[in-house]
Length: 166
Image (cartoon, rainbow, N blue to C red):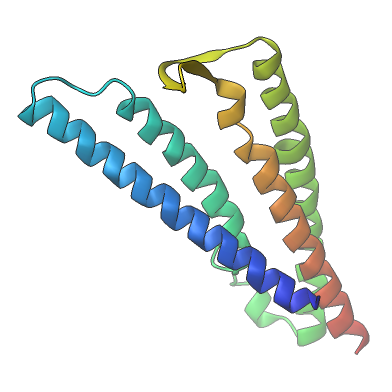
């Protein structure tokens, strides 16, 4: 499979996952409002579900926006450089992103997730099939998104190197 095809497939999967999570969050909040104000019997799980979905949308959305180059960037300096220097600066920036993502998101997120799983920390109001949801599963999005960001940072580095040597 071609690398560009794989990137498009990965982005499409991220798009559909984010759309699904957003729809679930909207439904959860609407259901919470309906049960609280119309039925006068608030739903127990929707508050936590919408909170956890917001975490997933925010962190996974960050990985997606990085992949499509829509993240926050200051381009004041970059636009004034020559093309070759722009690619060199892009390599430096991508290396910093790779370093941060691998240390903070992948390594730190993995340790945080495993610590909460090890201590069996559970969600007080959200259960699936009669079993309390372990909070560590909510945090799986952190190392997962970190891996995606690291992947796209490596792709950016390789593309910039190719542009320099071309």
